[in-house]
Image 1 (cartoon, rainbow, N blue to C red):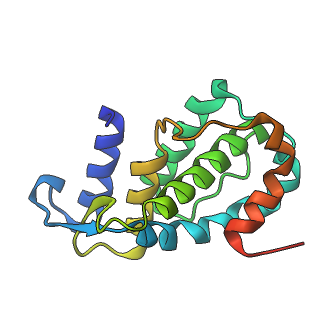
Image 2 (cartoon, rainbow, N blue to C red):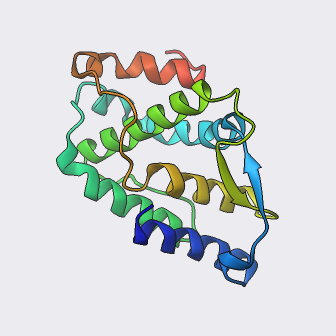
Length: 162
């Protein structure tokens, strides 16, 4: 785990609970629990999905994606990434899809990650997003030929169809 990532996780917990993360009790979180928290994030991609569906994943935008995630973790307001370039949205979408795919593949495990006990759903979401997405090393190869198929992969995850 990266130092900034750990600092963000500590910030999320401390902001809500008023004490250091090291003092928290931790509980197991299954892959299905992570998916349940992340799936509503899919809604954020709907306004830009047509714009980003044909854009290839480009690693040069990962630092910008990390900055967007950092701002999401630090702000108390609703996440708005509307001003992000389409290429950064594409990186965020790939991280979203690959996290959900990984969690689904590992759904047989009783624990996929640890999360502090007693956090609100909003703080849990921030914690999960930072844990999985920040500085994410993609677990699967990005199939550049399927970048035009991003829209259909997105609909598969959200259950929404045009």
